[in-house]
Length: 273
Image (cartoon, rainbow, N blue to C red; front, side, top):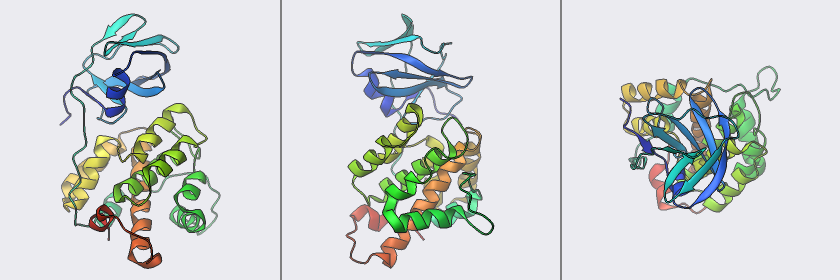
């Protein structure tokens, strides 16, 4: 069941300061605006919640380049008020102490198409693991940014998953993840999603899928996967794949690849099978 109208954290932050901007993209299911350097989407309540999503009862019909203004906490497009929800969506904290990657791998059954030229027998996971071993999270993301198709290229979706997994386990400093997102050679919409993934926030079905995997609820995990599959051509599933690879990789490192690496308390409780 869909949640009632709400806004994500990026939208709440954008509405907190008077600013001007523009409509930067207009699609059938979502319109994107950039106001004062904050990018977020206007969409209907039939779409999923997320940090960049303003889910409104009656999404305005907008055109590319139209002027957007925030004044006294209210949003205007070409001078017309857009009624914004007051409720800010926040993902539920993940339960801890149970494996995530094990059930996630069983339920997901998906590998993105990134056109890396791996050749016969090559695998995307193997390529990502090699990049991790060579240069860590930054190297793994850099090798896939901009790869594949979609509004947010498939490679960007996978990279967002890698950043999200790293944030979930608390293994890197947030500043380093944000720097990776800021340096991504991609467009501003994709960069906004990467930035929030680096902060440990993503679309609601992903959070729900991981929670179901933690509690080992197969039916709930399959339901969340179906909702992810409905997002973009493969964007939702590509995102979840990145999380899976990130969790697997970090679990291996915590288990023994780098025994001298300090672990945060959150990493210890979230370690995956």
